[in-house]
Every structure is written in structure tokens, then in C-alpha cells.
Image (cartoon, rainbow, N blue to C red; front, side, top):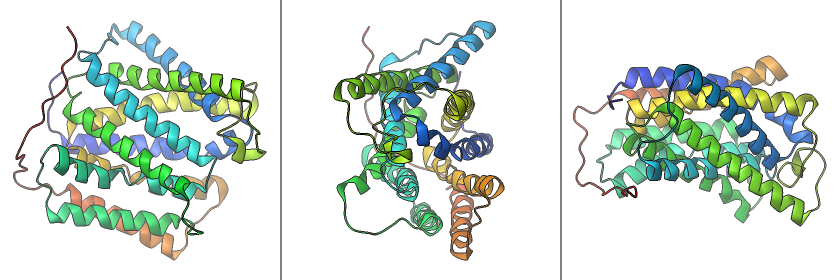
Length: 315
């Protein structure tokens, strides 16, 4: 598989993935009422890996990565981002969690310049900042005081940005199914470890969604079980599309179109729960869409002023 630059195709794939995630994420509020974070990650990953293995056997595709160490680094970063993000959903208002995760485009620009020496023009920097301002307008996170927990979603955004950048720079020649197997494998291990820790620790568990991060094993029946299966299959398709998008185009470009998740999530929330955005929210959505258009206009000749030596896999 050769790495080619196909920004148009990458954007379409990312938009399709975000439309799917926007629908699935709207039902997480129901799963968090009775389920547990670690069990959710464990069982969702088991479902996804089961489907992935069947597809690989049917199509005769190998799940073995070409560069195991690089894929492992990417998978760990992605798992860290997702565990923190979903954990924050049970610890703080969802607005704070999502705003933190969507700082990823800002980190992509910063880290591209810091570690890879990319020259990121003022236009792209301004567009990403405008998009982030739109996110704040849409979600309007609570400002009730400085709390260290507030910075957890930002850590998720940083880890997610690094995972996305390694997809493009380190894993462009990897098969999409191999990268999917690595991601869900790491999340399955993280979920299993979390279940063991919760069983041994036995912390106090709050009722409803507030107990999502500390709730132990429950029988996965009813809406919780349905959402686990839907998330497992849907995440497999959506993550596969997003991985391929990052392989086909510059991470700085692709990352901004992940902001479409906010638009799709808002549309699905209006359809499913009759949650309609006000004028401030609509203004934020317009800023996000405008930033995506501006950043999609590529510079004539992106330049790199230095290179980074990638880690070598053991023989």
C-alpha cells in the first residue's frame, strides 16, 4: 500500500466517520446510566475485534503490522485518549470533555512545528483558532473555578493529536485493518485492566452517569448491551474510515474536519432528543465550518525544515 496525498477522499472519509460517531455518541448518555467505563471499553473492543477477525479471514487480509513498534505507539496513544475522554464523560459536564478532546487540531499544528519542523502558515493557525472558538461557542463549558480535573480532557486532546500524527507520518504503509486491530487491542487491555482494578479497589459508586468511571462489572443487558454492540461495530467502521483519512492526507488538514462531529452530533441531538442549538450555538457551528473551508485551501508547497529519526523495530 503506497502513501498518496488524496485530500478530497480523506475529507469525505472523515465526514462519514464523524456522521456515524455523532449518532452513536448521542446514545452514550443512556449507557452511562447503568454501565461502567472499563467494562464498556473491554466489551466494545471484544465485539470490534471479533468482527475484524471475521472480515480479515473472509477477505484473506493479514492483521500483522509491518512496523509493530510504530503501530504499538500509535495504538497506545489512541487508547489513552479514548479512555480519558470517555472517563471524563462520567466525571464532568460533557461540554468540558468534548471541548478538551477537540483541542487536538491545535496540538497537531503545534506539534507539527515543534517535533517535525513543519512550517505552518499564519492562515492555518488562524483558521484552527477560529474553529476552536466556534467549539467554545457551541459547547460553552462551565467556568465554576479552576480544578485540575478540568485539564484531563485537554490531555486526551493532546494524546489524540499525537495518535493522528503518527498515523500519517509513521503508519502510512500499514494496512487499515492492522491499525484497527492495534487500537482495539490496546483498548481491550486497558478495559480489562480497569475492570480488575475496580474489582480489587471496590470504590464507592455514584448513581447514574456520575458513576460511569468507577462502576464495576454489571450484566450487559438492555440498552447498555445494545449500545456496546452498536459502538463496537460502528466504531470499527468509523475508526477505519478516520485511520484511512489520516493516511491519505496531511494531519493538519484532516484533523480540522473532525470538528464536523460537533455538527453531526448537534443534528442527531435535535432529531433524537429535540435539543436545538440557540443563536450562539449556530454561530459557533458557522465558525467551525468556515475554519474547515479555509484550512482545506492548501499552501502551494508545504515545507519541512528538519526531519525526525523514527524508532526502529527490533529485528
